[in-house]
Image (cartoon, rainbow, N blue to C red; front, side, top):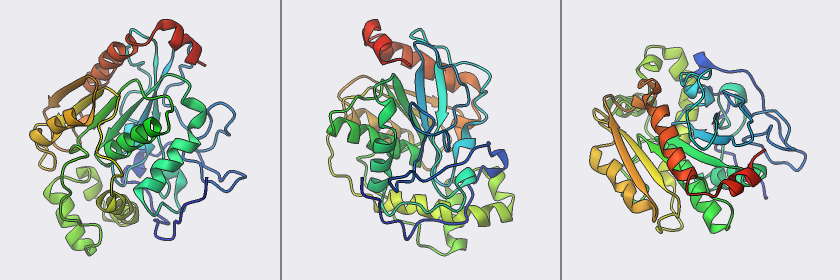
Length: 307
């Protein structure tokens, strides 16, 4: 893979959840690619973290894509000591770490969302032959959806299910961009629809450090031009917050048009970050839907894909 142009990526930034930072590091591979993940199969361990290392014979990896400005520590509250229940096997919560934040502080980001998607698709190639699913929140939902679309376009194995949370459907018209506003106006817009965790807004130094990563992710999202409007052949579960000013109920329901397979939706009490304050309810529902999706795959196929 040709290394993407990254001159405009964030440097010296940390995610807005840096105070929950988990251990780890990342490294550039010998062929010049910056790995988004590692530690799977023959890849080195830098940059990869599973909050629970089940590694069972029928384990399903749930790859978690953080919101704008966030890193893998955003998922630390998902009780790593509790295994997600799934009739089809154990589930590993595997949060993805974008460049330019937390343990990848100082690494440049990507020029376009398409570059990020292609890097994920290529760097994670060793696990596409094992059972996996995607969960993405807000910005992460769009990234996860586009990775699933890229896998389908490449005739690669697809996720058992795509979970999208706190996100407008990918096909909906874009809103007025905010990534190039000055800091005061940018933060004002984020506050208007609870676009960053309230805890982060209480710490000016943290917000100042997180600003480059936030702007980077919003730029990728707001300038992204999808190469296809076709729905994907992956079941989708969509989660929404009933008090989410940024993503109304109708925009969550619109995800039904993004799949040719099964679609389910649930709504929670809470604002834009309901997924991180709902306790085990959301992980229980993830396990329930993964069981439904995995049961459509022959057990022999699951066994042949396992580690």
